[in-house]
Amino acid sequence: MTAPLADLGGGVVLRRAVVADLPAVVALLTDDPLGATREAAGPEPYERAFAAVDADPAHLLVVADDGGMVIGTLQLSFLPGLSRGGALRAQVEGVRVAAAARGRGLGEAMLRWCADEARRRGAALVQLTTDTRRADAHRFYERLGYVASHVGMKLEL
Image: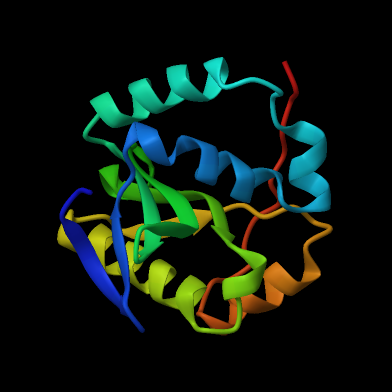
């Protein structure tokens, strides 16, 4: 196990993911109606993506670890840009907490850690996107101070 990045309370720590965590992370990504329809069938694409993320210091794939069991995950990426006076942005992706672990404040603790880490690295803002069909997620993010300030658009390739 990698060194903890944060203590999330209740015996749960946030730590950098390792390749052995991939099956649990993928299970979290697929454990909802939207994720079940868009995730790959085999491990190879996830192994390639993990290797790329893990090798790049601008990206962190983290897991919430409860005594060796992965019960949450997210990716935090740092994006330099020219807008906003050359501001560094922190992008949060793939936020998931296992259904059985919801309601314990883990998602909130994970996102507060993201904001702290972004500040520590000098980012000007933390941003994320969430599917328009995730009304509960929208309320959750708004409760934490996130503002629906932009309309996101995607082009599937």
